[in-house]
Image 1: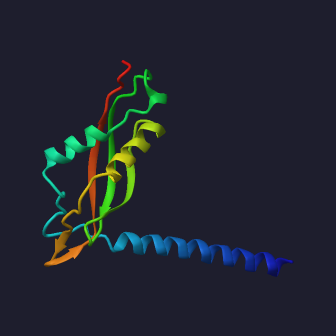
Image 2: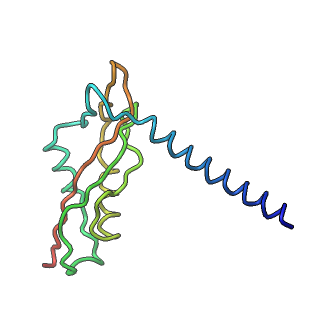
Length: 135
């Protein structure tokens, strides 16, 4: 009985360790020290205009008084696409989900970051401002 419990514990620890290693490898292939940062598919004003033209304040949150900035983080892939959109500083689950949705809609391909002349994956951070239309 003790052997079965011990081996179950070992298997669990190995599984957890492998999960951490996989996560670390995913993080490791994203460059922080780049020569050229990723560039938007168009100028900042055009991206901002696009975001606010497509941003929908969640109807369930109207009148709540929730206003402010949601900070998003995402990866610019080597092929110029956006992936892994996350909220790093949010306001509420509904508003945070809308920020993720609208960032995912940004059209066009980005110019990826470069390190030593080679395209690399990199993080990009983008704030999205929300104002409660009911207040």
